[in-house]
Length: 143
Image (cartoon, rainbow, N blue to C red; front, side, top):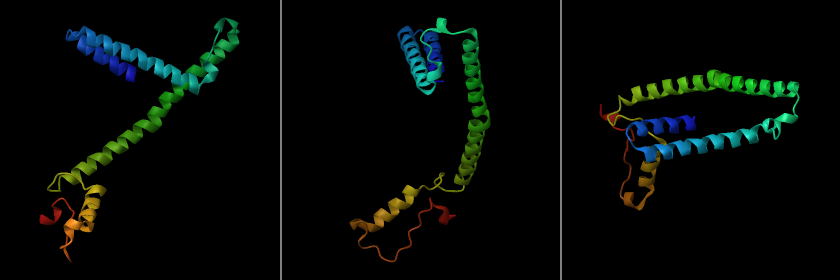
C-alpha cells in the first residue's frame, strides 16, 4: 500500500510540474516495494527460488498455487477481519463524537484529564486546598 501511496503522490506533483519531487516519490515507492519483497522473503522462505530452471512443471504449479492461496488468504483476512473491525471502530468513534457534543469543551474526557487533577491536588501548589469539590467534567456540571 505504501508503494501505491508514493506513486500517487508522484503523479500529483508531476502534474504540478515538480519533476524532482516526483522522482523522489517514485524512488521511495521502489524502496517500499523492495521492503515488502524482503518482508515476504522472510515470511515465506519456501517462495525463495534461486534457480527456477531447476524446477519441474509440477513444482512450478505447486508454487503458483501457493501464491494464489496466499493472495486469497490476504484478501479474505481484509474482508472478514480488518474491514469489520474498521467499521466497528468508526461506529464507536461516531458515538463518542456524538457524546462529546454534549460536553461544553466539545470533547470526551481522557484519563490524563483526571490524572492532571490528581497531580494538581497532590502538588505543593494545592497545599491550601482542603475539602474542595473539583469536577473534572469538561463543564458538563454547568449545564
